[in-house]
Length: 137
Figure 1 (cartoon, one colour):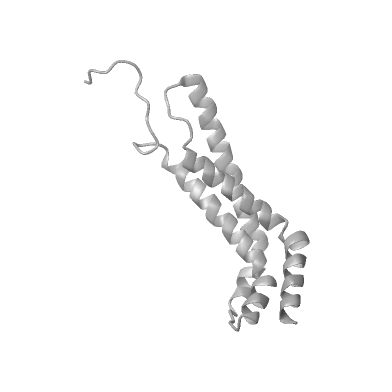
Figure 2 (cartoon, rainbow, N blue to C red):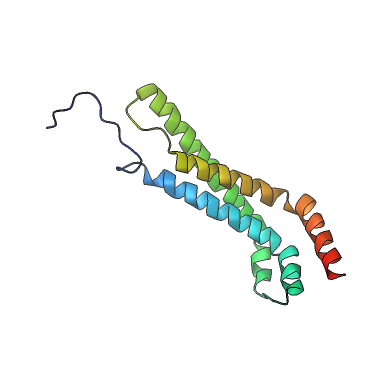
């Protein structure tokens, strides 16, 4: 028995919800993978060729870009849902720690990367290809 009175608040580093932190990292990884998969189609191979390098294995990764983007959106959405539920629960109960700043920051980064993946083909790719074409001379 402890001598302290009142409810004990669990901190993120002291037995917090590891699934929330894992989901935040998974969301960032999946979103970064989605951006890489969209770049692997045209921009990345052309820029590598311009630099004198080649990477032939990118074609498989580029073919999976839709599934990778959907996984990134799903992981990011699930991460935000868990963070929102935890914040709401902690406001009403007061017996738990709110979502960590690191987890919220990771989810924000994952959201930005997933949005970048979504706008890659209509906005980023034409601009980047024009830039590569002008660099080739």
